[in-house]
Image (cartoon, rainbow, N blue to C red):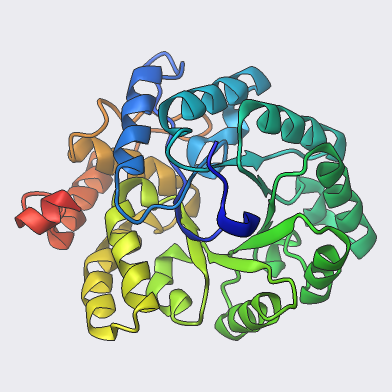
Length: 318
């Protein structure tokens, strides 16, 4: 399996979606086609699965294992695969880490345990990550939630993690406060042994990237990987005019995907792929439900506005 250079996750890392049949079973053929479609985009550095975007909370351990198998079989010879670790307890998190490592993953995306919504201490966070690091030598990406959720880690805790766990190599930063986001980027990427910051602020991606993130990890990359890759390259090249032009195309999509209720973001992305002819159906598992016809019509409208549907050749290619 390909690895990240110096085991530092970086660049444009779409989090793919998981198609289902009408009976809610995994549509493996459509999943393989979706993986190939995203992996073929120039500038994509890896893909992520078994995360929010693949509705991991509704997937059994056996299904997560099969999702990784399909990913490895389909794109594992071309791109590193980031495997999510979604677990409320550290023992289960370690078990997932071992399965993912054996299955060929190249890095692990560690979601914060749900009990942290009730409070956390630095010792708890360290204990959780140590369990995972002891189970796998793969690079770890800490998913940094907004601190208001109770699941976000103070900067001092992130520094302590980086000090004690050498395999912590990146964070997926969902910090919604711009000065705090910038402070995190400067602090972690400025360490003697850098920890990369991957933006997941997809609703304001251009603003986030210009602060200096060394990559992005985003569910909307399942639909607009090409636009995200080109935006990231434009920012890296200090081409502000091109970056703003691309952002003008991304903006209507971000506005639609990340509307309230926020939990429907990947539901909306599935509908977008159906409208683009890239998925046969947009089935989600409960408690998510089918979007209304009015909202689907709104998604069609922003696909037209962005040039992805019925637009120019450039728009259709993106």
